[in-house]
Image (cartoon, rainbow, N blue to C red; front, side, top):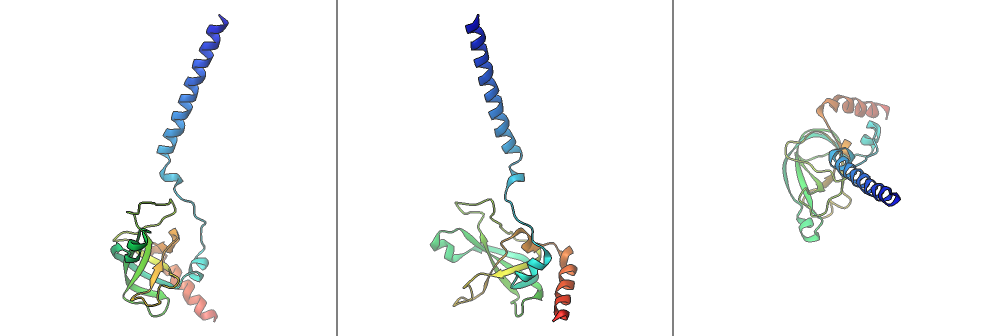
Length: 167
């Protein structure tokens, strides 16, 4: 009798472990989008201070970065048509934004990619060394807040204007 009870407890234990394992697997599938990447938020002052150019524009084309084809890094270049330069001096009518390719063999959950049609206020950083001997300066928009919706444009304009008045 004791052996039967012990055997029953063993079977129940294995069933419980199997159910627990299934719950873990299912919860990972259900919440996969919610646990992607984690970013520290940036204030508007931090975005402005950390940007070499602030523009309003829209991605009109995405192409593979020629350098990444030889390096195997899997990056794309987004062509952003500039409709307004808020800050940053002489900016061309189109700027090139470098970002990880969606087609890259290896991706991280923190990779930010852009598609044709993405538009808004861009807080861009120059890629170090990108304007040395190249036809165009490459920029980075490597934080989720570096592209904000057009509803933020007036806030950005006021902040930039206030900073100019303070000088």
